[in-house]
Length: 167
View (cartoon, one colour):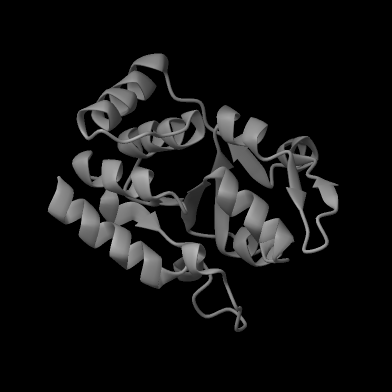
């Protein structure tokens, strides 16, 4: 049983998959109440390990046990995110668009963990970039982990700087 985390964390599919692949999932759910959108659930069904062996993620069990909570934005919120992406000439997947829509309507106590450059840039245009985090930042204070660069705080800082210049 986990201590009651104070922060809500939306995760994109890359974060869900990589946290399982790197054996960091328990650390994440012990620090946050993890939320995903329906599209993220669909995108996060499988991952391949270092030997390219396919592993199935049964997120339904985690949802039933309330380890993961589902948040569903309305279609107007998602379309607004896609319009912003189009204005910025960026592509974004449905899962990240749904997550940004949820984050845009949520309290200041909710954060979005992503490894998607486009989502970071769009978050700046939506005035919610201060609540977008890298996986490394989410795990600050945990045991030392050698994360791939795209999950690092260094990459997140680079993407945020790019967002400020672009938008």
